[in-house]
Image (cartoon, rainbow, N blue to C red; front, side, top):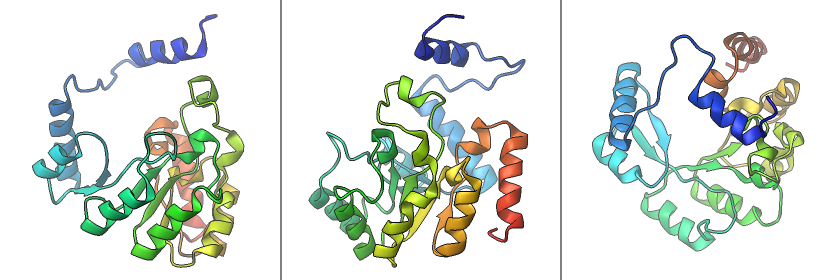
Length: 218
């Protein structure tokens, strides 16, 4: 259409090419209630972060595990602040770690102290490895790079931190072979399939998931 990519993406979200789209809630409270109803019906327990985390935990304490969004940039919590939150239970999962959006690899020296802290305290780490918004570098994430989709960038981190409890968010899509190699070599790694289970065409998600299962990693 000749529109800039951000405007094209926004326009598609407002007018999707779908006969019966599922529209988002109009208020924060409606979003919470609708989501928790689905979680109850499907028996879902969710790692949750954000400004309204306390509201969600108060409303559904048995369904909400407190996490924290961390990109390592300005405004991120310091190491001491995270230690305090981990120690008193305000944060139970170090997730979602989104340093990929800044072009920072997991074995970057600036991130090393945070991994050491998570390993020391036994805090699970959920790290974004894989798909972001389509055209992410043109949507304001200037450091985002496709090469950072490979879960193999976690290998040195895992060897340095053998007791680290780590899961790869978005299952490293689309780097299936790299993901299989990591799972085979480092059996302590887990995967999450959030986002790819709705952002991708269903046949592609099913194909990716089927290969993971057929390779023995169910």
